[in-house]
Length: 261
Length: 261
Image (tube, rainbow over all chains, first blue to last red; front, side, top):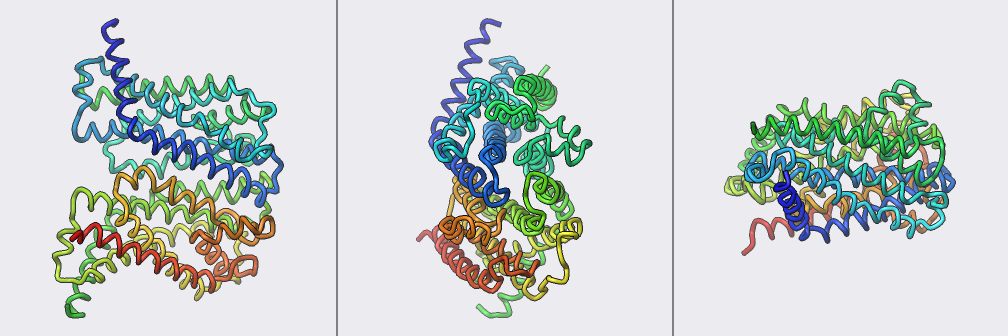
């Protein structure tokens, strides 16, 4: 086991090195453009024009949009494995050096760390743009960033599970349209869970099975400190359970794909 | 080249593509159904619960459905981009005894037909589900037909221009954050333009730079027929300007990608 630890970290360093050349593009796109766009259009324009919102309501609407960045970035980072499984199979070389489960675990850790780093500036950039329109007076930043990391971990495990499950990269678009679009929208992108539950208790309880819901609810609870949202510690626990669940499923399907003993 | 030869090959290309498309129509329609119902529930039923006036349901639904055009357009960009970068099936098309204008005309018409076959039934289903919000007596069929034609032409030329002016890797990393998402969020797709104008004239003027503003407003004007939206005549006129810009960009891209000498 002790021999595997340096290799594990070398793989992790390699992954970070591979994405170093594209880091600038990601920083511009996901750390600046997206937060600025979401802050201005949703946190300011939409919420004022459409809902005549107070600052808390506009913050509620805006916070959920971090979900898009998280899932898209985690997906971009893990999609490479799908292309690799179909073509080059560099993964075969990796599993000769490290047990397959550790290879998969390394990818989850890398994707979660990278996604977490990308989402770090989301709320500070929004605060700079929105000022007092973004309510942060009662925010618990430690809890916020804890949820951001656990959320990134869950997104990384989920996207890796998807990559190991779907048959080919051609079906990826269908998967996004059929599954991920609904997961994001019903994961609290705009609407908090309480409102959906008020609309339909069946739908409300059904979307409790959506892991993305706990990211938005946890963030709203941590930033706005309002008891109407699912409490942050519960969200962290749920996200950890979902992360473990997706990791186990990913292991199972990864074993089938690489056919190791 | 003779008109008859051009027209004959043009028709063959269109029918070939329609044949191929018919084989995946069911799957593509199935892809679009979950987003359709997600949008209907979110904008038709959940948004009013957080304070959106119910009079806004129909206009917002019409605007929100434009995401489908973006998704389908992006799929076309990726297909064309991959072909230009890897497969180069285009090289075979160029050798056909058809002028380049007719050839690219066939690409534009193909995409328009595909998008029409997918979006028209979906729009209709949405309107039927939200029938209480739509007053059928106000529908201007002539305006709607003309508007839809211009919307399809705009998106076809726009996405084809993107696929010929940018590289596939740039498209994958940047087309959503740097082009599509800003055009979407800084438009009146999810808020009516006159409402924004009443709230902040300066912001409403910025939104006039996005073609999606005219697409959404034109659709609303033709379908809902009130004076709360920018008139469809103006929208068509300005869309014509945008289509000309797209064609100029496409010409430039074609020259760069296919005729480097």
